[in-house]
Image 1 (cartoon, rainbow, N blue to C red):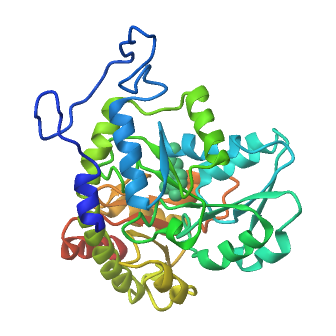
Image 2 (image 1 turned 45 degrees about the horizontal axis):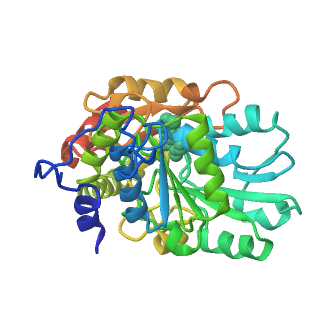
Length: 371
Ligand SMILES: *Cc1c(COP(=O)(O)O)cnc(C)c1O
């Protein structure tokens, strides 16, 4: 089945008890035990599993083409569970441009737990593989510089060295990029973003190509660590997923048009969008991103931090806020969000292009740049 169909039918099962077409929300934290002390309906306690979470997990597995999935209370908790499933002494390779919160987890928590972490430019990955390298973590497109990692090339190298590969697919979504089909072992999502799509649920997911021992360890962290989403959050996320493929088409179309507009604007120094032929990795992006280039872009305003912040303060439709992937457009001065150790250029603005009409978005950003 195509993803538009999966998004609707893998996300919803009519309720056999009542005939309700839309699945109910099961808020109960505990479930009846059988006389023989078993749990024949498959549910015992909501931290272990819950009907709404099970539905979200099977839907995420279907969308990404994996054997199994786990849902978490945030994208950060999902990534944390993968790192936690490793052992002291293991080496992790991660991108030099990556979601700030996950970089901070690795630097301040997992290095203390005696793991080795190297943040690299993936063009030089060969030089960084060590005998103890266990995990290669990719994020493509990356946050906020929209760098592209050649997934197929990394998978080939990882397989030669028996290293687990993972892709943070939050920016692309399975509508655009399917890492598991390319041989990647794990996909991670901040479902907070496009998957839920309405800026009202925090959530995360790990999807595995194979339901293997390492996935079992991640599942153990989910169960024992307890960083699970509530049934209501699972329900809302599933509700959002139904329109994901159509939302992504709109995000991609609007972002492409906005990127082209910004690229020729006299007040703009540089635009970062993998759909532009001027992007250094446009060819790789075109190869691995199948139906568009996503709804995220960054651009540098001519001038310093002051000029960039003024633009973010002057837009009317683009709201000045962090996060991404909702129906509404957001603009953000990223360096000040990331704090003093940021490598992000001071005149860079990150934009989550929403689903408003593109003419209104262009007019809004144009008046802000010219103000
Ligand atoms: C938001 C985000 C995360 C973290 O997700 P939370 O739900 O905020 O914990 C991880 N990776 C990327 C690319 C993100 O955009």
